Length: 157
Image (tube, rainbow, N blue to C red; front, side, top):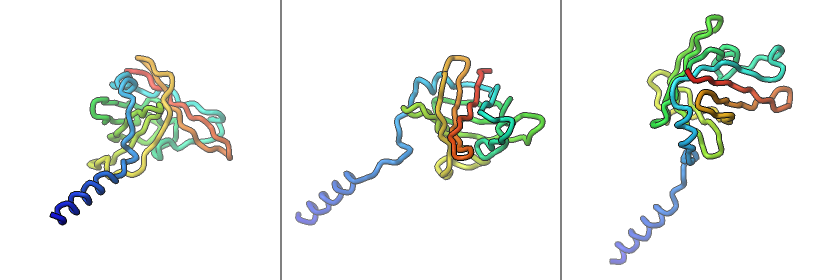
C-alpha cells in the first residue's frame, strides 16, 4: 500500500511540474481569418533603401520580394511563398505561421519535406493596418546601431 501511495504522489508531482512550450502561445484567430487566402507583396519600404540592402528572411534582397505570392491557410496555419521577380533568384517554400495575441506574425520557412517541429529558427514580425484587402508585416532591423522598420505591404489577390 505504501508503494502505491508513493508512486501515486510521484506521478502527481511529475504531472504538476511539466513546463509549457514557448510556442504554446494563444493565437489571434480573428486576424488569422482575415488574412487567410492568396496575397502578393506590392512594396517593401524602409528608410535609406537606396543605400542599404536588406536580406529578407535570409532568402534574398528585400526588393526581390516585391511581386512575391503568399498563401495563408488559417485553419491549420500552413501556407506557401514564392519569389517570382524576374531579376532575382526564383524561390518557393512551404511555411507555417500564426498570429499571437500581441499582434506578432510568427513564421517558419520550411525546406522541401521538412516538418515544422524540426525547424528551430523562425521570424517574428508585427502585423499592422489589417483590412479585408491589405495588411502590413513590419520587421525591425539594426542599421548602424539604430532600429529601422522594414514594411512589407501585402495586397489580396
